[in-house]
Image 1 (cartoon, helix red, strand yellow):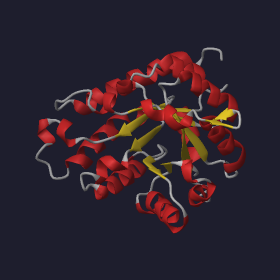
Image 2: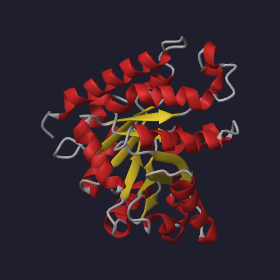
Image 3: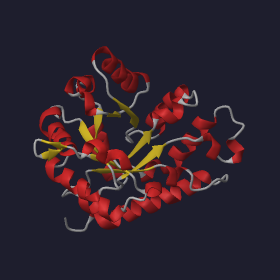
Length: 274
């Protein structure tokens, strides 16, 4: 089953547009895990098992694992999700972008070494840097478009022939790079007007939307400006607000409660007219 099919079915089955970002920070783990040599895997596995029926996807951030020498934990975590929660796709948040054999190896890393269903990529080097990912028709290619960080305007709002750069990226991906139907875009929750603009340019292309929760993005504005006519089309990502909802031994239960509340808040706005 392709990433696009997995995502579509997860939207419906779990009635959810929530993406849980898995960004482990061992210093924030409950005390009971601090002396566990496999704490990163144990923590993330508990979060996954507590929230899997509340989400449309999971998004482990590779830097949080690699910085702690926990690449094997990442591989095992993705395998655990596939084995124990089949049908919930996994996006490797790696933001890769390079050319030639390096790009090919990055695709191999994401899809074959780690077993991810999709990967985030940076389009700044152009189509040839994306091609090894695009060629994997069964996998998702989630391309940075309009990000949620304050410095996004430094480049993404530059005028390129009467359009802003992020608008050019959105239209290029939707019209030229999506031949296999496996593309999506990253558009931040903190820029709702830009989110609406991107949606108007790309039709039903899925959008990964970080920035709700700890970053303060407005859920109602995200859903109103980003949903498709069917009330889907979004992967609304929250990481810290869910992962660290409690510092106690009840951390997994607390994460489930926050993920459920976010899902329910999103769903209140999904049926509203466009």
